[in-house]
Each structure stands twice: as structure tokens, then as C-alpha cells.
Length: 143
Image (cartoon, rainbow, N blue to C red; front, side, top):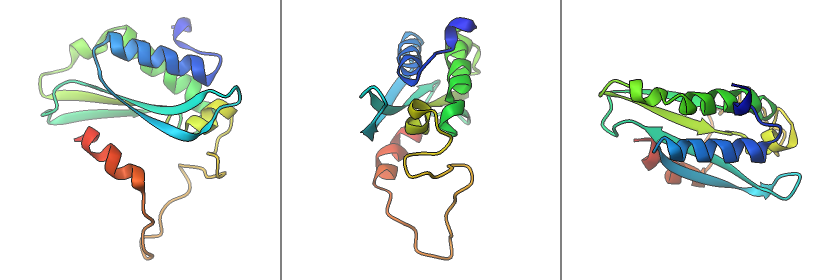
């Protein structure tokens, strides 16, 4: 499994995209507006394996706390490398979200570019919700 670990965000992303493509995953990529420390693009990549009509979907997310993305990324990559998707039942699918917080992953930070901890900052549902332009773009991929 040591080859599944990466020393930086860009390498982890490259391994994930390559391994997901080899596994014949349906892919989508969502580019971040900022760049990494070496000028690299920051992207959240999403891979879907299994039937779209699946009754059961396992969702795995790496890099919510950016700096912890190294471990989560390695687990996702290793799962794909071992061809575990071939063991899915016909009514099951897996959605792998790689680098939920690519900024924190690349810059070795727990928080995102706005210093927000994605696990501890949440919406106040008693107030009007903010507009999230990316939601409409991502929603069809998750159905």
C-alpha cells in the first residue's frame, strides 16, 4: 500500500485520477478558483463505480481536513487498485470524493482558504441560506 501514499497533493490527485480511470469509473472534476503552492490546479475529483440505479451507495470522502487528505487519498487509491469495485453487488455503487478541501490538502492546512473548518462550521438554518453556485453543477452527478 505504500505506493498509494503520496508526498504532495498534486501527486495524490494524479494517482487518484489515473487509478479511477483504470477502474473505468465515471469521473467528474470540480476546479477550485485558487492554485496550490507550486501553481498547480486545485481540483476535487469525483468517481462513480456501479450502476446509476443502485439502491445502495457508499460515499467515501478524502481531504475534508485538507492535511488529512494524504491518508484518505491513499485508502481510496488502494481500494481502486485492488479492483474492489468488482465485488460490488448489482444493486450497489460507490462514490469516491477525492480532496473535498483541495486547498487545505495542497497547502497542508486543516481549514480551507477562508480558514473554515469544514467539519465544524455549519449553516444556521434559522437564517436565509447563501447561494451555492457549485451545488447545481454537482447535484446531477450524485443522482
